[in-house]
Amino acid sequence: MNATRVATTILAALVLAGGCVAADPGASPTGLPDPSAGASAAPSAAPTATPSPAATQSPAPPPTVAPPTPQPTPTAKPTSTAKPTAAKPTATPAPLPSCFFGNRMTAPRGYDDWAVTLVDKVYRLPARYAPPNLVSTRRAGIGGGWKVRALVIPDLRALKRAATKAGVSVYVMTAYRSYATQAAWYRSSTRSLGLRRGSLLTARAGHSEHQLGTTIDFGGGWRWLARNAWRYGFVMSYPKGKSPSVTCMQFEPWHYRYVGRDLAAAIHASHLTSREYLWNLAAALLAG
Ligand SMILES: [Zn+2]
View: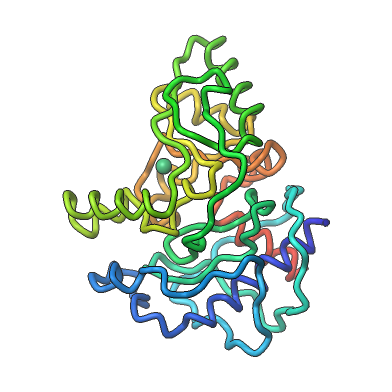
């Protein structure tokens, strides 16, 4: 499947998925956290196994922020094997959603779509999303335990070796977290820090990249990781300067999502966040 078809699928699915929850009472159009959003964020919609946007759904709500700078020439080649849907967007591509507590089901969200599945404050994974082949990060020779999808291991091992060679110590603080575990972490975080600070640090259940099974919080080596992690397929999801304004989360120098070396290199070269990039990849290709 080529990048254009992936992009078309992503944007069509996200825009249409957005329309189906436009009435979400937890969504605050002001972009400010809504104290009532926590309760409404509970997984009420029954997730489907494959992306299936209905052509009859209404378009996404009007934008509340200026569209991000268009991405000129994405060169990424996502390894997604998602099947394109029949639905095709006819309207102008929607801008990146602002940072509100949305409850929209992301798409594509198949287990083969791990590199391009957008997970943020607005778009979420199904509660039942539990990726296959979770193995200990120790298989990569890195300390700390926790699990990731097996497909992460080779590049994680290469990253660890390169760090060690450079005299840098890195280990895993946390990696895969299930929907239920994330729910507990969110409750704990918002209870101790309050809703605003807690939700900048810890995502609601379903809205955490850790549920993808490809995301790692690294302990140590943050400076080295900031310069080099992309070479091994990892991108910092919430970089300084764009967090929380663009990423919707606080600056987290430890949080890296694995997207594969090709896509990580493209995101690194773009100077965009992965959130912007995944969205713009679709928008730019559709516009062209
Ligand atoms: Zn994290």
